[in-house]
Amino acid sequence: AIVLNNLYKKTPLQTTFSGNFLALMGAGTVPQRFTLRSALDCFLDFRFETLRRQTAFQLNKVASRAHIVDGLIKSLESVDMVIQTIRSAPDQNAAREALMDEKKGLGLSKVQADAVLRLQLGQL
Image 1 (spheres, rainbow, N blue to C red):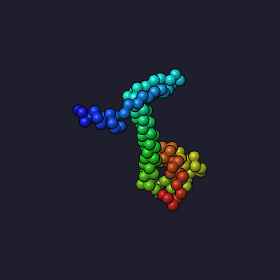
Image 2 (image 1 turned 45 degrees about the horizontal axis):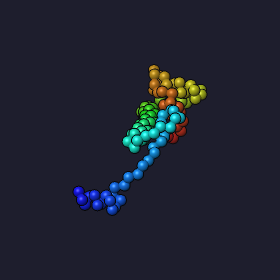
Image 3 (image 1 turned 90 degrees about the vertical axis):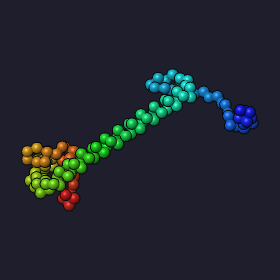
Image 4 (image 1 turned 60 degrees about the horizontal axis):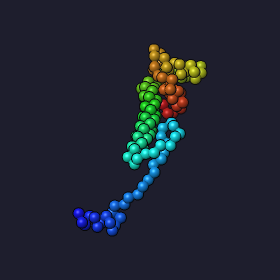
C-alpha cells in the first residue's frame, strides 16, 4: 500500500481532472449536463443506431439487387421465349407488360422486367 501511495503521489499514475460535459440531447435545444457515464452511454446509443441504419440500408440494397438477379435468372432459363416476346412487342411498354404477365410471360415484377429490357441481346 505504501508503494502504491508513493506511485500515486510522485508519478502521473493517477491523475484527476474535471470536465464539463455539456451537450444538446435529442430534439431539444436546451443544453444538458452529462456525467462521463451518461455521455458515453448517449454516444454508444447514437453509434448503435447509426450502425443499425447503415446495415438496414445495405441489406435493402442487397435484397433489391437479389430481386433483380432472380428475374435475370428466370429470363435466362427461357431466353428464347424472352427474345421472341421482346421482338414481337410493338414497343418497350408492351414488352414489359408481356414479361410481367403470369400466364403468357415469366411473371416478372416491373423492376425485373425493366432490368431484362435494359440488357443487350448479346448479354442474354
